[in-house]
Image (cartoon, rainbow, N blue to C red; front, side):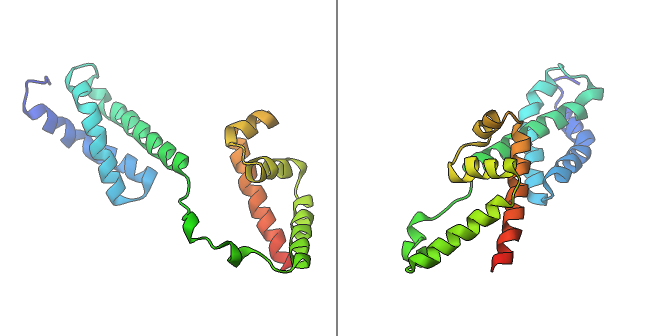
Length: 168
């Protein structure tokens, strides 16, 4: 196949679209998103495929690698953007307590629940949530991998939620 052959693009797509689409769909579990990523994969990869730099028997592996990179880019963008919060919609009076004793009880309840977590879990909660450090910074402080910090934070928050339910 050469770039001059008008059927080459159609031939590449017809031979590779189904396994590529299934690969992407398995990752995203959403038909519309899988179609969009599959299409974007072809747009990104087609000139490279037509240049002859990839052997025809390696097309699907190459396309999967391109799709995987697109998926990673999308996940990174979502992770960086975080959750949207409408600051203007939050009314501090709705969340403030008028009774200082109640506030003190809530603080003590939270401290009691935190003390029931492991030392590492408390440290992750303190660094990530209370002090606002990033996952990378927290990982450096604790000499752990970022993935370990994410898992530890998730488990700590889940356990903390269970403990706080008991105080209600």
